[in-house]
Image (cartoon, rainbow, N blue to C red):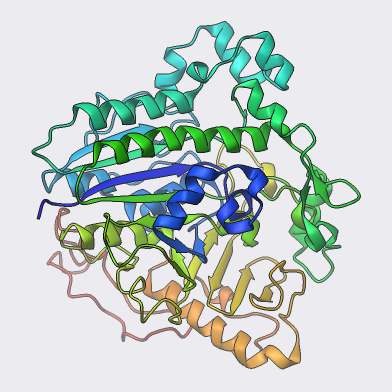
Length: 506
C-alpha cells in the first residue's frame, strides 16, 4: 500500500463550545467540521497542552510540552535543538507543506515571512506573507477598520481579501499539483475565527440577532475559586449580559466563514480521491465568552478554553471511522500518532503516545490522564496577570487544577460539566483528590517539567506531604538527531543518574 498522507487542519480560538457537533447548536453553522466528525473519529475529551497560542502550537508541532521545547509563553521560539513535525516527516521522504499562522518563530504574532527549512517555501504563508500582499491602508483596515457588517460592505470585503482564503488556495493548489510519487503532510493553520474577525458581511449578518446561552456558568460568582480569576474578571469585564447571553456577530460569523474555507479544501481532497489519506482537525484553544465572568483565554483550565475539537478521519473504509472516543487525549499525542500511522520510529523525546490504541473498539473509554499547563500569557507585557503557573490533570471523571500561587481546584467532569463547584476542600473527595495530586506530581517529574518544585506538593489541603529538596538527574531523552548528552562531571556520555533515582518525593 502507498505510504499514508496527512491533511492537518487547525483553527485559532475555537473550542468545542463553538462547533456544532460538540454543542448540538446547529445555528453555529459549522457544517463541514460536523460532517468530518460524522465520518471520522470524534474525541469528546481532546485537550490543548496550553490555553494560549504559542505554547499550544509548540505542543502540536514539536510533540513536547512548551515547558520543555522552550515557548512557555507567547512569542518565544523553540530551542534550536528542537525538531518539528515537518522535520520528522521530511526526513522520511515526505513533501511537507505548511500554510497559515505559525507563531513559533519567536518574532511576533505575524511571523517573519521566512519559511523554516523543514517546510516547502512555495506554500509557506504566515502572517508576514499575508501582510506583504496588502497596502498600508489595507493593513490598517484589516486590523482596526472592520468592526461591523456595514464596514465589510463599505470596503467591499470579499473572501479574497482574507488570510483564510489565501491559506485554502494554497492547500487546493498543492492538492492539484503535488508530486504523486511522494507521500505528503499538508498543514493548513487558519487564524480565523481569532480577532480581528475578518469575513464577508453576509456571515456577520447571519448572527446579528444570535445569542449564545452560556447557562449557569455565566453566573458563577467565583466564590471558592482562585483569586486571580476574580482579578481577571474585574480587570477585563464580563462580555455576557445579565441574562447570561453572549453576543458577538463578528466572532460567530468568522467561525461560520472559516468552516466554509475548510469545506473548500475538504471538497477538493475528496474530489481528488487521493488514496490512504488521513485528515486531522483541531484548534489551539478556546475563548471564555463570559463563562465564569471571564473573557479571552489565560491562567485557567476551564473546558471553555482547554477542551478543543479533536477529529481524525482515517482513509475510506477504515473500521476506525464513524465513532466517538471519551478517553481524554491531548495535542501532545498527535505527532506520535501520525508517526505510528506512517511507520516512522517515534523518538524517546516525544512526550505523548500514539492514539491508535485508544481508537480501538475495546479502549474508547480507557482510563487516562492528560496535562494542561499555563505559565504566562505573553513575554512583552504584563497583561493577563503576568506569571501565574498552573498545572491541570484531566482524567475521565475528574479534573484537578493546581494554581501554584493560589487556591487549587477539583471538578467532577460527570456531575458538574460547567465547573461551578470547586471540590478541593470537600471531605468526601479527599481520596480522589490526593490520588490525582500524586499522579500529577509523578507526571511532572516524569516529563521533566522545569517549573517543578516542592511547592506543587506542599498544598494547604495536603499537610502530610514533606518537602524534598533534591531528586534524580535525568538527561535529555534522545531525539534521533542531536549529539549525545554528556555528563557534566565526567564529560562522557551520560548514563542517567547521579543521585538515587526515585519517582516523586518532593
